[in-house]
Length: 125
Image (cartoon, rainbow, N blue to C red; front, side):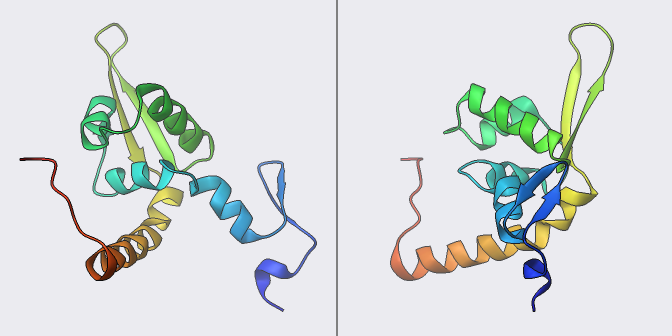
């Protein structure tokens, strides 16, 4: 039997999942989490840098997704300075870095699908 199917469920941080695929999708699934991780894979970024690189995400959604990714241990948030203006940077943790090969596979697959069945569109005139 496959490892992900050994028990009746798997657990992480007090939360139960029917299998490891469900656990993984809870951690990185949805419209924005993997996109945020993708933009952090090459190094730390400030909030405004992420906003510029992902212009279609709302500020509230970005903020919520960053908090969730931090809570789940995929990214870290480091605050520099004690009084305004403070500098806050986000970066991948070891757990987040372990997801980079999956991100690269997803990116490669997406590029292949667009090349074969869609098209890349540039927003610049």
